Image (cartoon, rainbow, N blue to C red):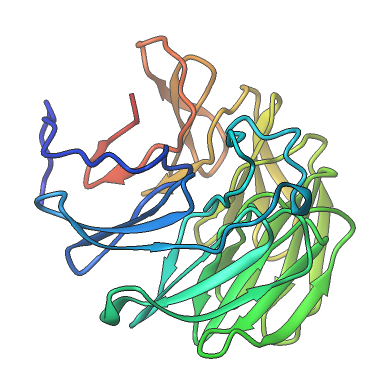
Length: 294
């Protein structure tokens, strides 16, 4: 269905505190986690609450609070800090204290399992694939859990901490670490296929097409690496403020003041928006239009 501007507000729902990550939608229900420690399930068309689930609260001495800009007044709370992922009947998400939850979406968010991976920080949003839940962590690992039980199936050790979500393409997992490295991991063998240097920090999630992996380097550039070999194919010199998106041979990303569209084949500029303002989210692509958060 085509979406034509101007867009109008259909509804809004006020959670206990600000949502920290993007919502996900399935079967007419919007799922979004919040800084109040609740996962909310909302009616897509009316914005009405269907159910909510409160995660376990934690004490202030169990989390390093000092670098968090959403510090709770009493420090006795937990935050949902990842975007959720959904299987046929479950929703999976992580909390700031290093826990991953699975809820039954067919039973009003009834908890199925919870696991703490033994790390004081978890920001990497999970992905679901064939009965597995995959994500990175500050433990310097990529984790793979059984989606039915929460049991750890395998872990791959990397050189440094992982902040962003992993990206999956053709049974390969791609992820960056905060020490400016990019990895390609075979999901079936758990072997590192290739590794490359970014020359810049990357806090953003990669995206991919059939040829390249596109990575945003903080305050530096957008890079395109060969998805099979890890060879750097091109770099576009502009400071990215968002994760890139790719569709129909065009890579989109938000810069400091503009949205950019660049040729996925050679990294040349196609266009840049003429509206100068700050952006801090990835541009979603809807049919032939680009919708950027304002």
